[in-house]
Length: 349
Image 1: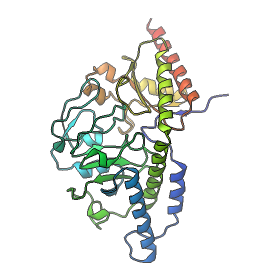
Image 2 (image 1 turned 30 degrees about the vertical axis):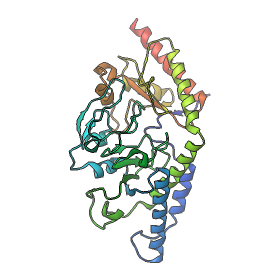
Image 3 (image 1 turned 135 degrees about the vertical axis):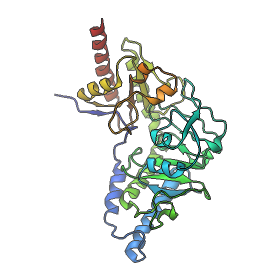
Image 4 (image 1 turned 45 degrees about the vertical axis):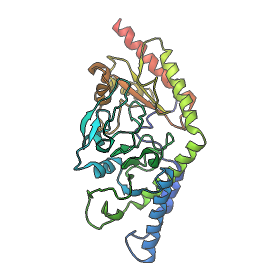
């Protein structure tokens, strides 16, 4: 009997939480447009405002403005468009598109920031899992991968703005939020009806927002229960099994502070694209880096920024697990991956 597939790509998108599914089903029964003034519209508006407060509490952003968007990509564009801000080469593409690469990155993946008010810095990297120390006063931080996986509060960061996303924490895809300090300037990308305090026009995604709020509360509860400590134990088991395979490998960021669920494995010369396909055929969903490249597999821009050469940057495999990942799944993956690695070495001999 064949083994069931194992999903090891949580940083790309997390499985939908049952709490989010239930909240979305309930929201489907709400009839009104949130901008309408009749009873049905007021009921829809109340649902959105309750969700806004729940997300603010989960994100440690009670004093901030919460602007609902279609996702973190739109949130970043809303915060960054038209500004001259410095960034490093490890930022997500949605941030790199609006910033200038002027901040240095060490081989350990850490970024030096001299002028926080004119800079952006991610809280955690989606490929390596490496965490940053956020200096107070940042213009913007991408908190997408940190939110829900490690203790995080927007109020702690002192940043002017931050982006978060629902589908990275077990909510639905297609909804995110920009967190803003009160009084922060932010020119609307979408203009029209003046929704979201004039920050983002268009009828709000009521169903998605309801699922986002439920997922945010559930993620906060998981953190409080220490669920991600258990995830880290599984991640460490996985890495030990990979290292025991007999061939030298690079585990990027292993000796530093990382997300509890992320491993970036490099075997120079073994293309990440090839590994993804081989592991997919073996029953494992993994990736070669960020999933936001329209299905393309390419050399890691993050690793190049960290000083890795082109061959190593093209040979990365990202493994990202979650609370539902079982120990037997990571061990099965390690066995299947090591088997492919040995076959590759035998062919080269």
